[in-house]
Length: 386
Image (cartoon, rainbow, N blue to C red):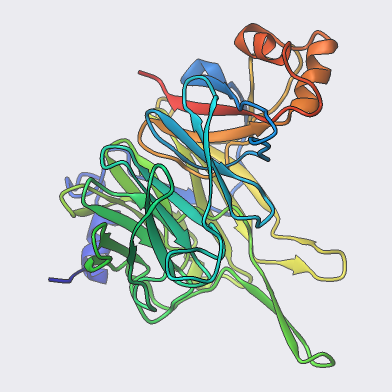
């Protein structure tokens, strides 16, 4: 049976406005997206564990290092070009295990690999083809097992492993349906729809009409993560709402964060997007819905972090301590799971140059010593401290 989860505006008002309300999270905060905040500098290794995986380079395994899934034993990646190759590497050593390519127009094939979910317990891989609205299920050898039905109700742009039976996904582009959905891994049937209340749908996409060529162009910020794994829960971000929610494994939902002023009152809108969330820090950014089509620049952003210990917001820069120089870390890459907050691809030529110039330390220095300009990237995992 399909369920729809919704919260009335009155309940939301009471939750957000009453600091002692047990229905809200203990660390519930409000972020003023127009305020100016002081600066804070952080060292990544002080609050996160870092693991480096050098992807093996052979004639078969030439991978540009776009990571789509990381399990306990395997890492799945593809190239930035749409060649259909899916590479499976050993999670600990980076050794190439196999290359899979099922690109095509058939019922057991995909046209484009948008997202991958690895289910190592069931030895299955869920490949999401956004363009054909299909989720194809393969075993870890690349053999087709089944296809999950997709339609306008289940049309994902983001997809994660919810539990051993279900997937959780999002598509904020469909305006007449709840954007967050949970579906069965067996047949794709809808088990839950999660409705985030808001006054009016606001798109993150800016459009430009070209009457001469009868074309409409659209552009959006590329750093919007509507679903963020947060230990055993999920943080859900709807750009049209003023409240961010924590969705728990028992399907209850509570307020996690609020923003002010209301996004509904702004023109142009300033969105609040979240990224890496740790036990102490909430990394986020404000993004202004503004774009200069002549110069192809826009969506000005401000990087923010909330320090739960200091109970204050800051602009931030995070540095990687495995470099002797001040090399900053991108804290806005795609979330992974409850163990790994995020990842970053380190290009081999840059690492080799840094090694030659004596700018690396520790494990990263050891790995870089064996790289050359033709090597695959090194994947840096940003993990929650144990």
